[in-house]
Image 1: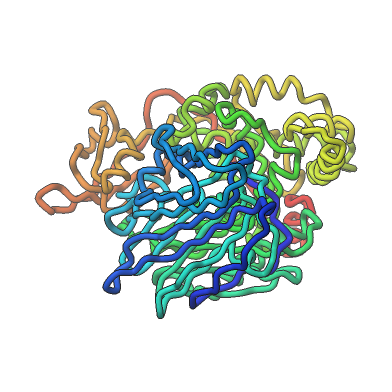
Image 2: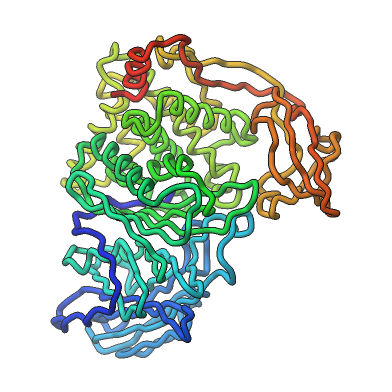
Length: 586
């Protein structure tokens, strides 16, 4: 969900199991920033990560050093930096996140510091807030994203850079997407930031080939519901399908899997794409099927939206474009999972229906885009809205284009043309914005002017409803009105409180059934989240340890409009295969 870059042409990601020799001296004029990292182990216990950065200071004798600060909705990453020292320059603080280095023009400068853990215990589902993106330094392993670890000299992410591991303790193994620097691949400071590192004696790696390039999986922890080899195979299949969609060659890629302690009755899975890597987090009882959509979505960010033109460069307004960058990425994720066969036709329908249901019952369904900008990082319900809204807009506009052109063009044609057009514009020194360029190409290929739709749906937030004939004779869009789904408690606060019921309203169906704040939800015995027409059953543990199943109809006041895909009945296998092709745009 964050700014992504195109995958660099690079050699394979390598696994290191020993120290490397220091790099040779560099000429005075070399602008490269040289990074290294090493686990610091004392009496057999990992205590920190040692970071070293060597670079030439600016020609005017003053260079600003930015410490890790803000990323992914988190702030003050600099709090995890300790024992910072500078050689070759005098340093003064410029706020807690910065240092101003004064030195001779072009002086050789070396910065060293240690990165401490942000977590006092292993991250755990239900207890750790969100994905554990801050540095994780545990006694026998570490997992860290570049944004939270590496300082940057100056403000130029396109400055050349390289990376080396420092001394690796005996018996340890480390892996990162930065390892291809050791093969001479070209890196920049921005790539150092957009990276992930894993290490520990128990680290395991798996390698697959995708269109001639090496794709590597790094796994920490013991995962009970799947074989690591099966995950590696699935990653390769997804990457192959998406590269086929974009007509792209193979590129090196690294997936880092970081464990979280599981919690009974809860499943947690999350992560983020990092250019030529993906950092994945989940409870160690997560099933493989839950990983497919997340992996496919994040790898799709390799192209969407960067290759389509990119988004606004204003960080304060970044979320305003998430309906395109995230929603269209979800549309393409569903499309390629079905097209590749990773999803069956029914799984595709279930996936889209799940998103449509979540959108229909969201209290922010018709919130304007300004609300997304304001609350995206502070309200999990708002955070989901641009994904849902944007995917439905992509489906709707795909339908409108097919109708307008008699089936000659669909959204695939627009997006593939857009990649070429964006590249041509950049070659001319222009800076295309993906949503604007999309609307122009859409119209060029025979579609209607989308300015009105942009205003109604993307800006004002009117509800997006799909036409009944969206998928022709393969399926129909069923639209029903029913009582609004209402559980009565605050689901996010309850999950964060170890599934202890929080925020329960005394006028809710659950309260009338006997549920109370302070009781712990063990699991949902029956019922469907979002479906007010099906009885809900919760197994709940009271403070005295007794367990009771509470039953209620989760119907609140007011009504909501629900849409879902209903496949045509009694389809033959041949018809199902044909519908899978047409519904995936193949």
